[in-house]
Length: 327
View 1 (tube, rainbow, N blue to C red):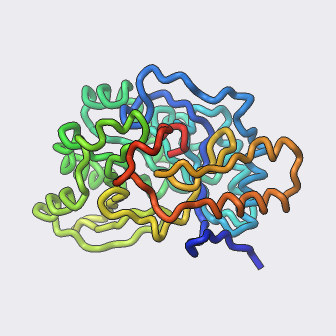
View 2 (tube, rainbow, N blue to C red):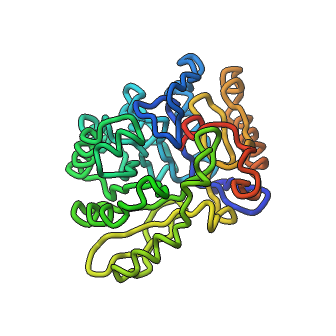
């Protein structure tokens, strides 16, 4: 009988977001501040063998979904090798990837062959000058990476757009049309006040109900569902296959159904994106604990998972950056 990881509030933890690096080749202004250099040193990264062991044990505890994240995960060398090892683990039914797609053009086929079935790509604008302003990078690489993912057969390819008032909210309809044209899924995300990079979040914040209502005036939106372990609420645009997801951590939090934890590149388990609760595993692994002891530590960590985040009433409480947590 497969064990189940359950927290103190009765939530089953069946989804783990695995950060393989805290480094990134972009500098999205809501994720990693310009000039940031306080990265983990490679000696403190979990090795592929250590990652595989932790994920195997999570699989034995009932975790079914693994999403590889960063930073930008494609910065980590030989990622397809790790994906092959993770996809082969018993109990792991869904292996997916979050990326900025700047390096995806060359890696899409090897990653698909390795066992990654689904991919999410962060893309907040379709305009080259605005992309440069938000990320510091070039949009051409991202668009080529997206088309390579489509050609490689990833299904679905999801576009994640953080909607920011006065920054990119005038592109919502343009992004809808782009996703209809290319058969991508679109997900809108509310901006969150995380660390110093979130200092503008309150000024840029838009409740996604506003975006939904705006789109409903132009399109007929039908309630829909999509496979996946995340919290998005979906609609389908009538007359098309486009699914649009709304991720609302601020206006309609989904804490009561939260089924996920995050493992950072240095082996720290983060139990909530909006809280500082964490549990270090790296030193335990390197001290030679048994798998049974590792399971006990993982359950102790899950017991620390808070009931809800405090973005709304204590935004200053969270001091780490998104890139450190693992997306």
